[in-house]
Length: 279
Image 1 (cartoon, one colour):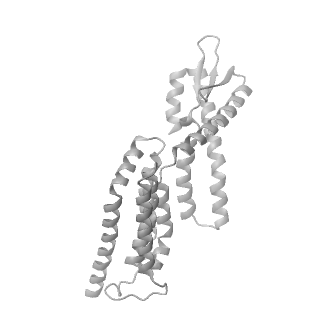
Image 2 (image 1 turned 90 degrees about the horizontal axis):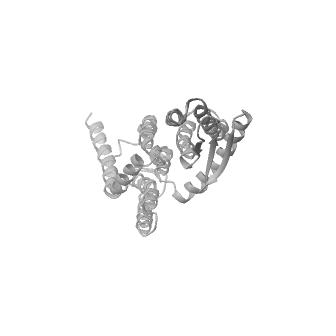
Image 3 (image 1 turned 30 degrees about the vertical axis):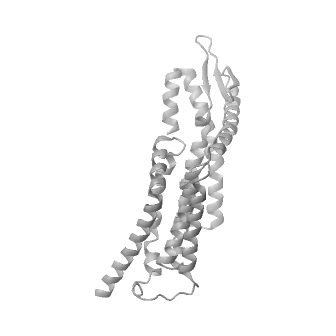
């Protein structure tokens, strides 16, 4: 029992060292990232990543027990992978250099978070072995989803998606016989519902309504679900790819239903439905 206890102690110390080193370097960045995720609707999805990551690690617990050698925790370990400590140290140095360089760019947070999985991978090689890193490859790569999406790409993609969504919803509404118009105001498509007995009701299809937030959130859960699901890789990939057009069709349907609600029950009811259906 004593050797086993000593092995558990050594393992706990190694894990604690990795966690302490990571928090010492990335605590400020992770705090900023968490605050942004709480405040920004675009980055709300980041709040789910730690929970999904924790589940991925929980699923790997048996494999980790198999690859981590408790018996050699206090002795020189033998490995078929050459120079694990050296490669791990090089990864940590690479992460540090990228971190330092990113601090002098216009996107320091993105650069800093990008180096996080590189640094953790290096620490695992130094403290454990290549087999442990192989088992944890996907959870470590999953940390890349913490990188905030570039705003330039978000606005460009959101503008394109808002145009496509508004045109598709407009065509459906016209087919139902409603009197609607579609115009662009300050590059934002606006579907205006014209009712003879009341003032026109404008529905602006901005980035928040374009379906981009839904697509980003869907991507996180789709990648997670595809990884944990059982089946052939090509089937999981096909299911993942098929989900993107389906989730976007759902967004067009949401816009159409909101305008229909506005036609029958007024703008206030339509806005309440926006938040309900958006959620």
